[in-house]
Image 1 (cartoon, rainbow, N blue to C red):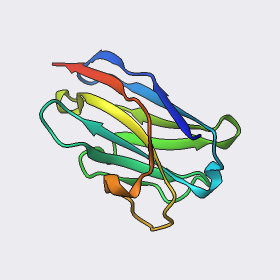
Image 2 (image 1 turned 90 degrees about the vertical axis):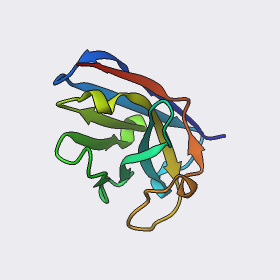
Image 3 (image 1 turned 30 degrees about the vertical axis):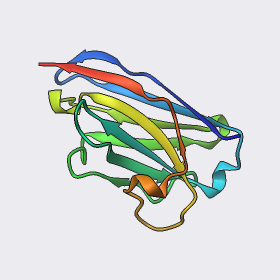
Length: 125
């Protein structure tokens, strides 16, 4: 059974950095694209970034392009989201997800089959 466990969230001031981690287990993840989504209170869950386990095919939402970096460590079955220059509007619960499609762009929730429980990121102004 595939499990995704996120960690690394917390409370930071605007302009600070955080690194989120997602540890995957229970599957053959070389076939998957791993994504990060986020959901703020009262809003829809939105796409943030994705990467293939091979390390290629990274893609970012316009709102985080240039500030966030997604990466993977196959040896540790872990995907990271480095978040720099955080803004109050980045505050949300961040979710890790795994999808088996090999489409070049996977920005929709329905393209992902497995989800983590989420980690809270709070940014104070």
